Image 1: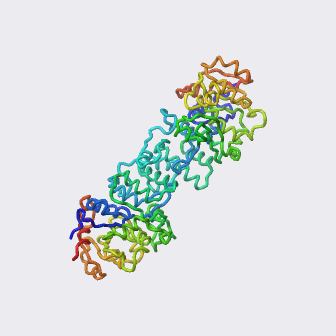
Image 2: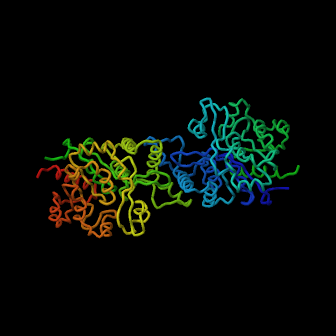
Length: 319
Length: 319
């Protein structure tokens, strides 16, 4: 059995920013629009200059729409920086680099949120305008805010991540509002009708855990209730991008694919890790997970598609 | 006696947008920083996309700083439009053209207002960053909103002015909040120590009247209490820019320099009108105003300075 090229099976991908966006893009190259729903972390969302900014949602959408900046992994390609440079000349904050085109997204989203429209509806309309055919959903229409407990006290996520460049030492995480936030109706339906859930190679602590925290009421005792696969964002003990490995170390855990598998124990049935970590295969199998070892580094669009194909074949196989 | 080139006399200019900004720039070319305070209308201010926008204040500051777009009379020179074009692609409002550089001003002002800083302090800091040495003050730190009563009902000023392009017929004006709004301390001090007040060739109904409404408690019975001169924005029965002439007609008044002089009767002691209107001189003198007839059309930077010089000599002369 193969899931590749429109088998009618339904996949839900859980994604954070850059790594999640890349795999989501790979999956979207293979699956039909009705076969793929991408649920995106909104724990990183914040207000800046009075604008409502959704970094992960925008990275996923820009990537799917071919508008993303391939150099940075965030923001827009062919971007200009006139607004933030001029705000900065006036004494404004420039630690969060807001490009001019990107600002257009934040301006219109903020306007619509203030008019009372839910984030999921706004995201749907934006996807339509950007020509994105697969379904992209924020994890919730209600605010969830990832708070990072550090040796310098608790910091809002973007304060820790962008402003402080992940320098403070991490002691733990808190997802403010996760208990009250409900998954949107469409996210619920997508999860309930999913044949498999793919946890993208995003940061387990701050990109995936907020989504799982919001969706946990949907899942009865046994993991996610369907086949579910996580792809390790840690390759050879390091992350391609972002602070996941540093976080593991600061929390007293050796960063490795095994540590990621451990993180998701009880949640997933399948695990994918990079060939450089093949020596960990037996240890991961010991966690009662089917294990796939393959190239997980996504340098090109072709890599994204190849990894997506390998994952879909892996979770679609009965063996 | 001449006021020209730093006589130690103090001038307060009351200004709206384009015409006001041009004359303010002319005055600033002649007077020392400590000799000129420009008090700017904020009745046009509004919120758009969650940002706090001060069109007249920005036009005056951009003009003084040499950052204004000479083609449009509003906005910034060498501007880009990426943010608003992208917001517009997402279904956003594009009737108020927000340039990217200009957006930087609105972003930082909005951020500081939300942080609790008064508009006058923000304007002072912005002027410093832009290298503006003369004092520019908003008429008040409290909101005043010019409302235009029309044959299609009452409209907020920018709704009437930009969105509806002044098409609805005007029946009257209301300055919401003017009774409660107080002149800032520095504006009060500038008015109280002024040797003369110059009412720039701005729209009497919607640019100057809001300022006079806020400052009226400062003035005891007799006009502005000092020598005060208004420059007619109406030349040969028409305005250089903006809807003043159209407003006069819709209010049942023949638009002319005489109508402007009438508008300010009891407020000013001196009046300046264009040479094309010289036939109205006797009628204006009949209103008990000293009258100067000169070229008032400001096409070049030289014109601005020449008009400013003529005005200062006119109000400085004892004859």
